[in-house]
Length: 292
Image (tube, rainbow, N blue to C red; front, side, top):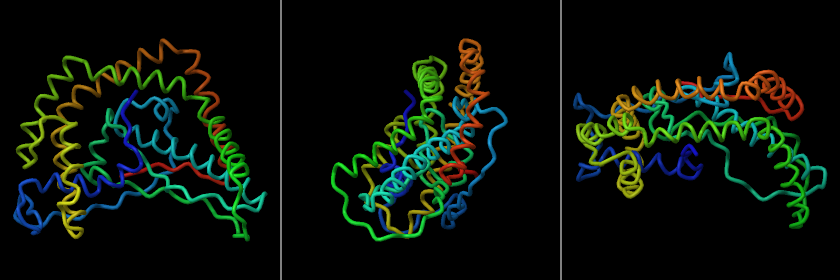
């Protein structure tokens, strides 16, 4: 399965990735850029509502940029589930326990390097909030009532996700197989030296993120945004030789995958977008995708 960041770690990485960029710093002074000035601030990401010309690119991404559609689809399905939960709770006059806010979650095996270079390794666009219904007085719900609403939400989300999840899971298995590809492994051997040139001592990609996590507390809050931009640029720069190998390989894999699953792909192209539009109208949730 393709490695996906957890929502909690996305939040934490704002601090931890910034710390990685400051590994050689011995004080709380801002890290200088290559030109001797403070790092530029992060550029806020935006949202797009434009669907891909082929829904295959949303469900079976082969490039980092295509995963923006995949992230948006995943968030949309989760939003539908939460909207149904909230509707159930309103009908019963109960309050549901608070949940962590939704976030666009990236895929480690398909890094969106242009986006990362612009926004850093953690920052993305904020997930839009569906239009809220008027607040009503609500009592605390019993465990059974809460579970009933949670089940309704999961059922609604699963009805959407079930139209593509099995096919997507098979595709992500194909993508993950490139971790063992000799050409990919050869390209990844360049990563450590490149990161060292940016002042980051990490032997590989996993060590890069582990080191960031371990140094979570080392960066001052005022330095986080600029340092996040610096480390995002370093990561994007050093992973480009790897993606120059992996992206063409993924595109070849996808062409073969589409041929091997022609009937399922034909059905996906015929049904997915109309289904999503009906869900938008029914639940008052709009598809949105992170955009640079």
